[in-house]
Amino acid sequence: MKEEFLIEDKNKFIEENLGFIYKTASFICKKQLDRRNDEEFSIAIEAFNKACDNFSEEKGNFFSYAKIVMRNSLIDFFRNSKNVPILYFEEEEGMKDIDNTISLDKYDREQEQKSRLEEISIYKEKLEEFKINFYELSKSSPSHKDTREDVLNAAVLCSRNKEIMNILYETKKLPIVQIIELTGRNRKFIEKWRKYMISLIILLSSNEYIYLKSYLNIRRKE
Image 1 (tube, rainbow, N blue to C red):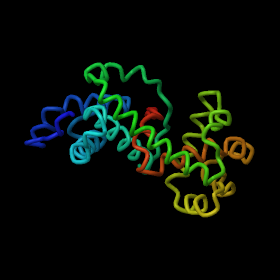
Image 2 (image 1 turned 90 degrees about the horizontal axis):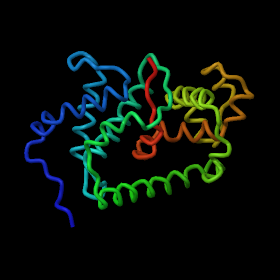
Image 3 (image 1 turned 135 degrees about the vertical axis):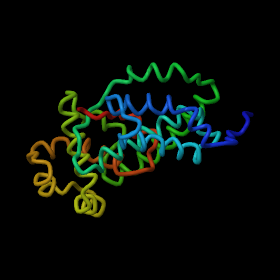
């Protein structure tokens, strides 16, 4: 059994890991952040602090978990910002430099896998409420990257609109008229990618899927 994760001086621990926080946040934001002026860096520090408070042994490796919490906090910041940025899906290649500084042992990997599987089970049940078969979702997802990102950005707008969210969860259907007005997308687009859009809205609007939301690997396009 591994020792419990204990921090004697949290402020000192955060100070010692500002480089990790900065590098992770800069990658997610796709720009070199100004440590004094950029709100994104402050949000990343707050997220790291939150990770310190919420981390437990069953979550696996702390730094891997902290990276996930920071990524999700910044995704939520992008989603809720007044001027919604254009978001896109990034391959995981760019995170290798960060990941190589974190050595995950077998226990860490097993614990993270356990957490992911628990989230997948909860997510699967939620999708079934919308009559979406989790295992067939990939078949109804866009194969073209640009289309996936078009749906992503439409889902971001929907996830921050209270009227659309209320209708979606009450009726288990997309309110097409409202989405057309909000996003400028036509009915054919919305109906064709309905399942994929709902699946993204559920992930983006919930704090329940820490690992799955991070797995989307969303970044902001300048």
